[in-house]
Image (cartoon, rainbow, N blue to C red; front, side, top):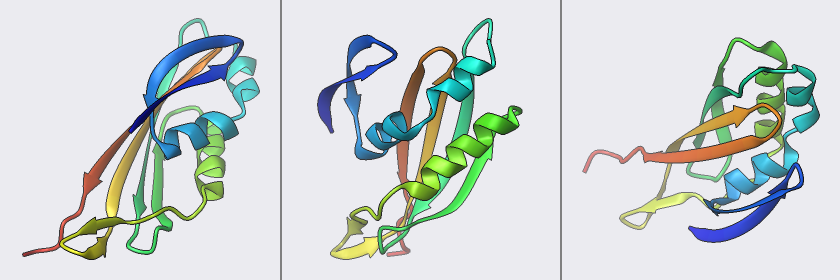
Length: 119
């Protein structure tokens, strides 16, 4: 992973980011979150699979706020085809979890969990 500086809500910070993090950060409509007038930030968790062809499948979102759920799904559906993971020379699926903390700003963490075929 590369370290990049991203600007969101007029603040600069140095974070370690991946392409899905950058994409979600860029595409997420922060105004939807700001319109909720939250007293403190909330968190949403989304899961998806990057299949052996680099496509996103199996998207699921956990959160009580329907507006934010819909926004995360909208962003994930727009995500471009990615380079698939490779295990022992073969393309394999990777399960991903994205945690988005939202309020007046957003913070995104991505975790990759390889689904390795039986050896």
